[in-house]
Length: 383
Image (cartoon, rainbow, N blue to C red; front, side, top):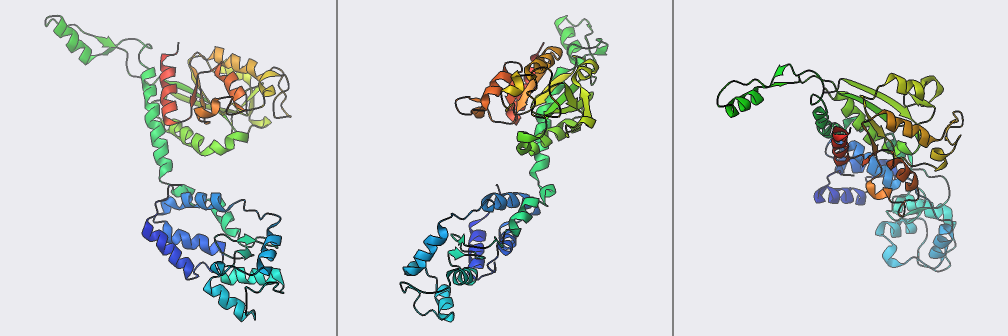
């Protein structure tokens, strides 16, 4: 996840674990590792993401209890027995832990040894290869803490990401002032050049004033499969909001595909809805339309009546019909897809068929810095 960790820090963590400073608790390990490995609060969120991704979803195979019991009955291999485990067994009255057919209450013993001696099987332990046997997971609170991501606001790359998008959006400035307005502003460089070419006789060159005439319409897919890309879309949205070279910026939302209604807020509910006909009537073709969505859905959502995934808002016409209306109304339109271009191949991704269908209506680009740059250039040359 990009958290820089030196070899010295890593060895320090291993030393701390060997001294038992994690106290056989995943929660304690979470804080111990963060204290040793993370040098700046700007990396706390990345650390939480790494911790959550690595430890979430741990499941114990159904047959692991039987395997562990058989493992104990057949005697423990010497190389798997740590010195503290040997001492712990002896303290429990077990003199020969390699004794075949050892008769003991397996769950209680294994859980005790796991917790205090690092045994690979049991509950509550911190053995790196350990597996829980019986009972509810007692140490998952650390995963819940990591999942809350309390430190996402401290990330240093969030602002950098927005700034990178802003840099790409500056190309939009070139879309204005070239063909709009009256030429009533003196072009000094053009005047000097023309005068020189005219053997020193003054020749004035006029240009259109550099007024902010660019109007952007941002239409974003909200919810469902787009939830995993919310951070990336938020960065782009922030970049658009902070762009000073836009005369107007309007943002609307849809879910999977545009149908009879478009929504003024990410919560695509009835109270936030306006009819798509009103939407098209109120926004003229001078707006540059940028649609953001993964275009991944069931084929019927594009091709059939009442194919919308939201059952409380059935569509009277197929989704492709509405997308065609958008493409015809807005002469300058592009589609940004957060799925990498490698996922647009139908042979590699079965959901890519609808992506292909949408690409036939809108020029589609990957939602990345390079993809945004290509999309902006496409908007520039559209007629």
